[in-house]
Amino acid sequence: MATTQRLAYSGSMRAQRGWKTALIFAAPALLLFTLFITLPVLEAGYASFFNWNGLRAPSADNFVGLGNFEQLVGNKTFQRALFNTGLIIATSLVVQLPLALGVAALLSGRQTGTVLFRMIFFLPFILAEVASGLIWRFMFDGDVGLITQISQAFGGGEIHLLSDKNLAIVSILVVATWKYFGFHMMLYIAGMQAIDRSLYEAAAIDGATAWQRFVNITLPGLAPTIRLSVFFAILGCLQFFDLVVPLTGGGPLNSSHTIVSFLYYFGITRMRIGFGDAVGVTLFLICVVVAFSYRRWVMKND
Image 1: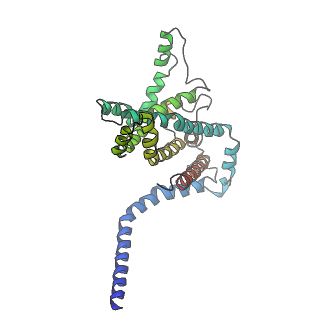
Image 2: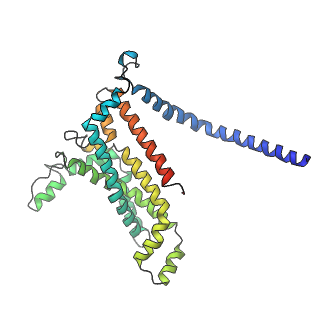
Image 3: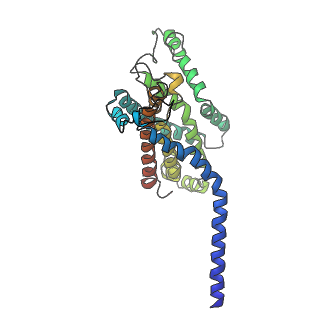
């Protein structure tokens, strides 16, 4: 009996020491998270109830309650921004990720030159977003851009993608696909290299074709990586902003805004900080719902 009590006491002491150690190491991270995430989110939520310009502390005189959120509901530009963000997500899932998976399948082996091509396809991802946007803005320029020059070389006319309100978003989709598919490609290559090679060897001995090996071995083995890639893609698209500013600035006629660029141009630059905070809170809630729902229903076994 005494031995049992001593063992229980010893286990309790180890557990207490473990908690103390965990708190000591977690405290700096918790402090930083509180200062730079929790407090700003709470402050933004508070300011979203005021018609506030950011120069003075919100007061009862400029309290508007849910007025900023009500403005969002009927704002056609915000509705367009929501549609564009959804379009970017759809393009990422339907075009960008399958393209990344196909290129990863071609470059996952150890053939000569695969490392070079991996680096070439990954380079756009490490290039700064602003630099990428400026490069493609020049290429899409309707007067001297590369696209127009190619068109004129084949007897066509000038192509003004960035000045057409129906085509400006297409230019953003093209650049976003070019910019980010390399990141997902590298994720897939890493996942493919973790699959047991003996499975492929056994399938080849049994006479399975390359397509059959891909469908029955590669895709099931990549399932957790694909789910993670989709998660990154959706959250990244919801926060899409850096390429919009140098490429289109949300124009023409506010036709190419995303949620975050709408927040920036109609909140911060116009000194409507309270309205911008309402947009930010809305985006935050969307991201939280998507993240937790995806984690709960799609990645529950990962």
